[in-house]
Length: 184
Image (cartoon, rainbow, N blue to C red):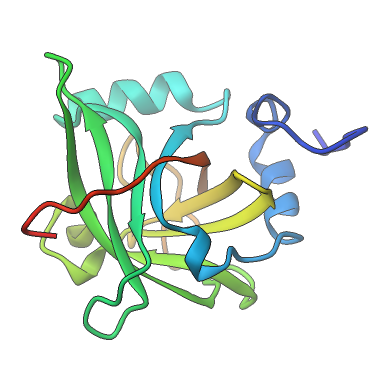
């Protein structure tokens, strides 16, 4: 399914598209400015993958993924860092799966992207060499993709050459300020 729109894209426009259309769109988008990646962003998943992905994450012991938190403050040699945000079964919000990020060449097409590397920290994503990338669809709407060193059932289930196949996510926001904890 190709991505054709009559006006500015909305999250609902993007959710209904398949991998091929999302990849074609991703290749046309710019990287965000470093300063705009500051705060808590809400997440969404493509319709083709959401149910299976949420089930796989529960089986991996992960809580409900709410989105990402970004700080445009340097961490070691990186331009910024952040966390994923989750809702626990008892309704608590917590941050985990820390990552470092830079506006850097994409692992997909070499063009600028916000590239997140989980291997900067000892966590589940780091153990799988998870890499996320984000580009701007329009103000406050972002298209992200991710891949791992090797396929992870339910998360990056398909092979994709030298790494896993690409999967997609969406972010909206920021919706709140990211107030770092003492260990951030």
